[in-house]
Length: 160
Ligand code: FES
Image (cartoon, rainbow, N blue to C red; front, side, top):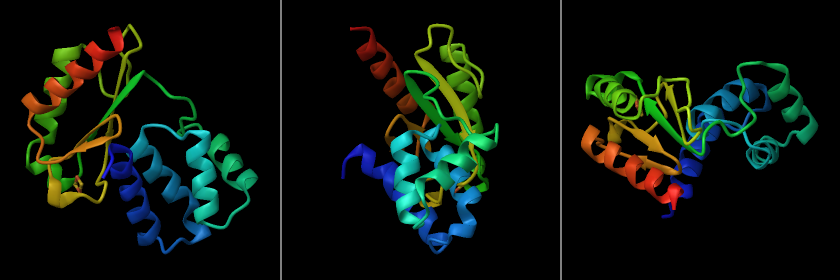
């Protein structure tokens, strides 16, 4: 399974939870933003298709509410799950370690624009807690060492 599939799988799970109901559009957009960090055009098109809604409706809702982010924030996006299962397994400590290591606050982007850090509530992968999403990869049973190493690899790669 590719890394992209990981996020896609979580979105599919959310869509199923809401039974692909168009009336759950807001909740699904929230969930999608939690999983992906922002709502890309492709993602909104996908959601429109899955809910059998006209793309204009989905784009309309996504642009109306200021809490939806439609542009990719940093070059790399890290999202930590602070839902109950992940929290009790130490996701908060991992997030603090990331903040310290990369000098970035949750909700923010590093000064060089390379890394954005977000938090989310349960992404539906509690069996993998604590879960941290690094770009398209869901790192399950995460430790701060593994996550920081992975981020360093990405940041190193993007400098080349
Ligand atoms: S609480 Fe983190 S995946 Fe459920």
